[in-house]
Length: 132
Image (cartoon, rainbow, N blue to C red; front, top):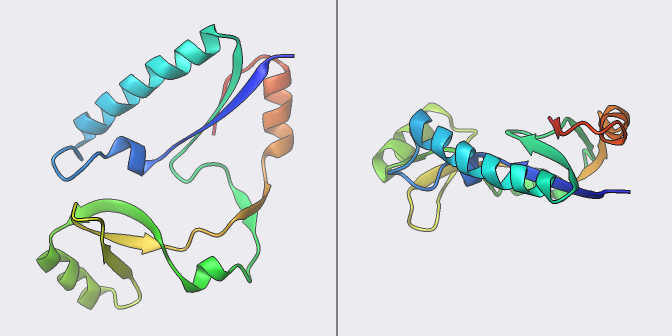
């Protein structure tokens, strides 16, 4: 049986900072990542890659993460733009992302089940590299 590697590739890995958030920058980041994924496949790993929001998952509606949004998403904003967005979207939570700029944060509850798990397992067992 092969070794299984599950890789999560999201916005945080594709957008380094405010100076590298264009589509071209993200494309370059994906190309670099793809080289590493190909290397893992060459080493005999079965690979499942999740990207963006990853696979559709079931979460517990009582997960405390819903009360404490902490996962940064999207682009970086200046303090001024963040304040404008906060006025436009009072339900958004926007934080200072470690001095890199301001970003929106959303809840990130723990997954309790992957909706596509059966299909993913079948594809891996049949020697497919899965991107979902």
